[in-house]
Length: 87
Image (cartoon, rainbow, N blue to C red; front, side, top):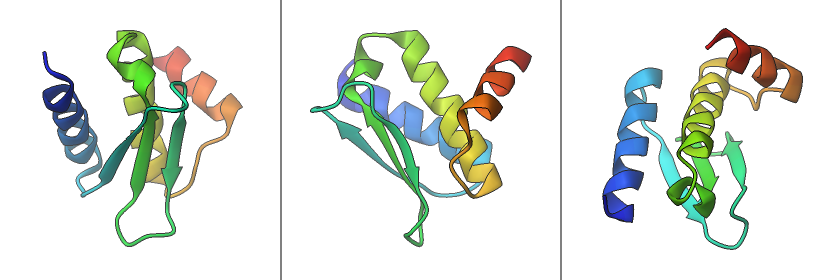
């Protein structure tokens, strides 16, 4: 699958699970980047380019983004570990 299609599918999945729009950017400098920004009208999700190499990282990023958007704040590391343990 081409990178652009993969990114589009990730964006569609996050938007479907959160029932809202997002902007999605890929950070090619920091491959492990995982961040959600709420200072904008539409949340900005920034994912590292490692999503193209590691499917587990991509799934984890989606889970983190969805939970953060639902709670309208970046979730804490312990919260995230508990979320992953439930899934």
